[in-house]
Image (cartoon, rainbow over all chains, first blue to last red; front, side, top):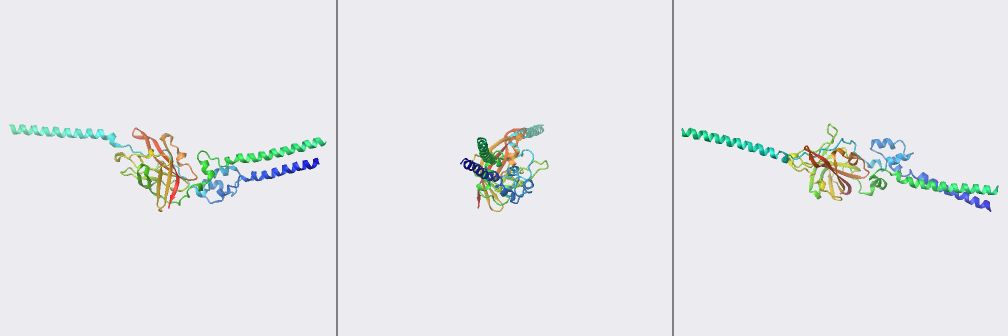
Amino acid sequence: MRRNVLSAAALACTAVLATAMPAFADDPSPVPDTTSAPTDSGEQAAETGPSPVPSDRGAAEATPAPAEERDGVSVVPRGAPDTGDAPVAAESGGDGLLIGGGAAAVLAAGGAAVFVVRRRASGA
Amino acid sequence: MTPFSRRAVVAVAVACLVAGCGGGGGSAADGPAATGTPGNRTPAAAGSPVSGPRPLARSVPVGLEIPAIGVDTPVIRLGLAPDRTVEVPPITADDPAGWYRYSPTPGRPGPSVILGHVTVGAYGDGVFRQLARLRRDDGITVRLENGTAAEFAVTSVRTVAKADFPTEDVYGDTPRPELRLVTCGGPLEDGEYRDNVIVFAALRATAP
């Protein structure tokens, strides 16, 4: 009687372990989709190419999506883009006004000089 | 002998049960780690790219529309400058936007990068003058050379100091089709803008 009970317990343990084994083996199974497909990404092809079935979890982490679907940036530029040429109107507005005013003053002074000279010439 | 044998068998049975449960628990705990890429990539990695619109075929962008800020502009191609920084569009009136040609074409998986000026010197406002006004879910449509179009939805808008430009966030790989719009912003310091304005967007629809 006791032997039967103990045998049943041992059988139950075996059944538990037998059902646990597929769970252990289940982890890598989604990965072949990502590794068996052709890839156009050089680095990832190097990581995943050698074996269609990854042997470690690192490969699974490196290929979360099919390689053929991932184009990526092939050359990463340096630094930040300079996408703003500062507006010059505000900066040079004062200078432009100054230059224009100076030119007008010179013209006015020249005109006045010519006027005075002609008046003197006509008066003499 | 009989009690000892019984205890031994019971101990073995308990050990077997613990080992079985522990194995199952470990497997479940390892699940998230298998898709454990950092930050915002986890959902996409777990959900696969097919959860959104189908990626478009490769075709270079030729036009960009952002109705929320009145942008409708042609798109030119940009490469790298000799100093390995990204080229920018020319300083002209009605300056165009430019697509960084070493990034994916819009609608392909990965970050497609488009740049434009905020101001263009004597010509005044640039094509991306109002970029910082964009808000989440605003639409961005990129027309491609083959006649198709990719419609993106804004996911976030960030203003960052140029000194802290988030290279990985802008150019880093993404499993789904995304878009980055980049311009300058912030205050002028010695004639140069201090910051960059970056719009992050994800593919919402494709046409036809």
